[in-house]
Image 1 (tube, rainbow, N blue to C red):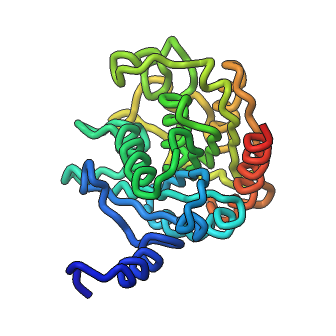
Image 2 (cartoon, rainbow, N blue to C red):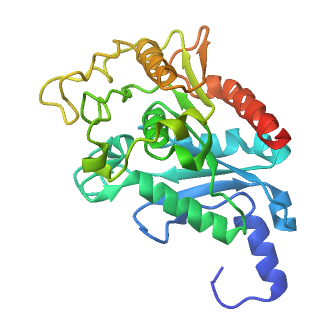
Length: 285
């Protein structure tokens, strides 16, 4: 197949194959080092306006396809497109795995990169995605809650799954443990009122208890005082995050899933239930 000029019929067929339903992987126009794929409900091809869910992968990166496909049926029947960004390991040539989780890595701002991706696909599909939902599990849960802290005004919901380390809304501690230096680090002032308007879910398995990957130690890239203070396990840390958000006026739905360890697929139904509830309330209003 070539990219030579095509007939209208061929163009329409290619759009149906590559741009609607489960799409191919696209490079981001603003920074082609990063990619994304989507699930786009077929009704978008007929001019239908839909909502957007951003689903962020974990450290292994492969879950972006599981999320695209795992949310596809939900998206089709609930008028929701799904955008799955891909943040590769070692994009700066250093083999680093976790930069995206903390929003900034060298000159890369992952929060702003995501906003560029959303703008790009909104323009492509003629949609108003000035507000969207964000979901992430494990490393994606890192991203999701920190994005919500930095950009709550862009969200209609946030689902935070099994984040290994959490940023509490502590104005006495610096990023990433707290938020004291947001202005200096990101040029952003924390908007407590905007975050309080975002419906938030936190979801984790009650058997998600391994700590080898989430315990910070001196000398580690993200070590700082207070790095482990939110708890030892993922459920403990997510409980601390929920308490911090609730203290700031955020309504948090906390789902502790019985019998589930660190398994993203086994929490997706809880996430879909939460998003469906938010959509019903949002569209009803």
